[in-house]
Amino acid sequence: MGPELQYQLIINRVADLQEEAADHRRARQAKAAQKARQRDGHRRRGVFGKTTTS
Image (spheres, helix red, strand yellow):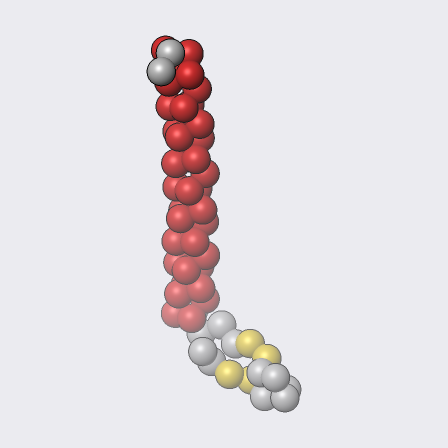
């Protein structure tokens, strides 16, 4: 395997890992935001117009 090919493989792998890390980061942020809304007593509408505090 030539050095250029190996370098491209490394660059591609790093890009994949960075994208995966960004996905995980967004998921953690969304989960934290959801927990914060629940702690603040955020009320949301239920399916049939009833309010819930979940």
